[in-house]
Image 1 (cartoon, rainbow, N blue to C red):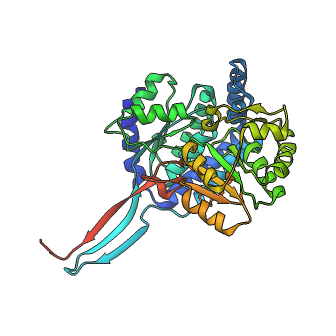
Image 2 (tube, rainbow, N blue to C red):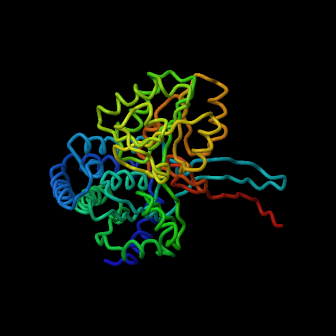
Image 3 (cartoon, one colour):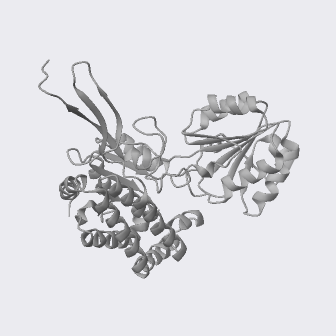
Length: 414
């Protein structure tokens, strides 16, 4: 099937889905969750084949971790679908209403975007997360994953499409592109007249390719060159736990920390504490000259590119700074607008950092790993938007809608 044919089917399905009741969508989502559990063996077998091929092709352990599904992870994905099913339906929600002096009554209400395209890499959980959010928000979706997870994606799609039909909604509300060539990606990027918005989820290369080549509207997501700044007033033990979690809990995701900035006045006391924890996960440190002098020869010298790199691996760039000013300037220069953190006991410094750092999520004394739709209470997210229009930060149900103005009159003319 061509991408254009998929677009035609998606538009027809979106028309039906937009008129579906909250009860119909909830029923379909619960059916999907049940089917994912019931047909776990099929999905995990497909994933096992993807992982084996990925290992044979030399994928890093971090990327293999992203790719791998387990009984526990698939159970978590199904539970996420159930969580989305139980969230309030944004469609038809009244944002505002008012009456004009001429008697016109104007209502601003939430409606679906229509057909949402998602291009993503080797993360099979995205297939289900994206489909469930699109379904709940009344949008048909066309999903184009990377070749590394194609078997997993197609298996999940077969399960979900069958559950949709059993629940009385069109199977074409959810479609997965089988062709993983560059041609299919380009065709999706240029599916004008069918696709209402395209959302890329993946590394910087994928996102920039979509931004530069798409002729349909794009929501830019994901690149996470995230920083943790340890201020001179920070509790060193707390700061060490935060950077350990932000870097090592799951390094292959976009909200993991990539750079540690440390105030010069706390560096000697703090850096050995942090290194002792990071060593338990064999995190490679790349530091400036001051960091190397404090921690010794086990630290590799940092080069300029390290400050701008999203490693997505057990690698952390470390720099000692002279002031809050220098930390903010460094983040302004190298940050990607995703998630930034200050660890401090100074209220003035925390407020200044919160005010001056330009990112979708800014933290005081908490790990950047919390930038996540579920952690924010949105349910599974479609992605983390690092742009400012039309959405920013974790994109949940509301961010997958737009507005319609409904105007009621009694014969008014202008």
